[in-house]
Image (tube, rainbow, N blue to C red; front, side, top):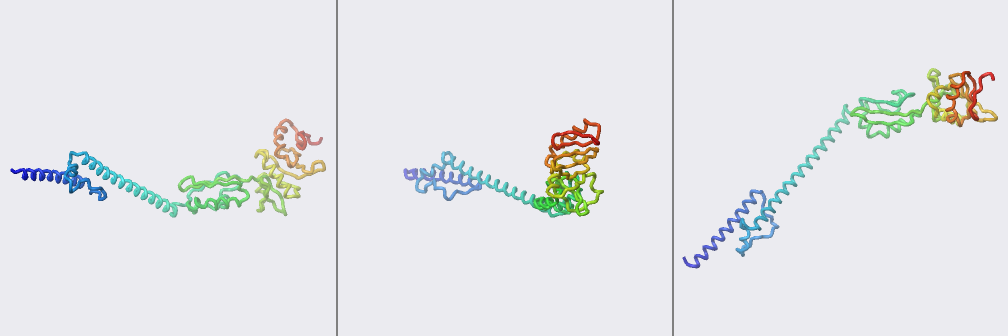
Length: 308
């Protein structure tokens, strides 16, 4: 065999090795489901057999290319997985929204149970009529229009504060704080309740409705009546409920004198502006005496039996 034939045979063997390595690389790419990056610079030169030999399976360049290709494949898998997660989350959100909307507009979304707490003078029916909520009211309306119902409740002078809460799926709780009644007064031959904030209710009542509340007499001014009502409204319920009559009884020495007749048979004299401060001494004084008489709390505090 001549030298030229030997040289040609070596070149052919080398070329076969290069082609074999390229086929292995392409086969790996096909197994990974990838194709060569078109923007990847050519690492094998058609004009240089030395550069092509770098792509043999045993070379470092081949190992780097394999790792890089494998990482791109894993990265694409991770990206697909995140998209799937986002899609699932969006579907769940839409499903929950659809369920909530269906519940809100269906009969299941009505206020099946309504709890009224904190009321004493007002009945449950009066509170509900004032607030405007009933068993046909949609829960969605109660939630979204709560400010409307709160404002409507404040139109009742007997309601000082009100809270509306959705405690369960179809349960509404209405908590009220009332302006207590401190008595009643006669105006134009009709009786009207007096509240602790000094206001009088416009709706007339009969005496059977007074429930042992004190009657207010001889008041010539609404301003004076309001001042006295506010003072009595600050008394404890036990002390307030022990009053049977409140009389505006000014004198020369005390133009703001109030005379109160108590259920226990005693009479109390006190300054109108100091009722809440001075009446706190009354329970302690009456337990010390065995007779009925006048408890004078205008200046200091002393007791005078009737007939003396």
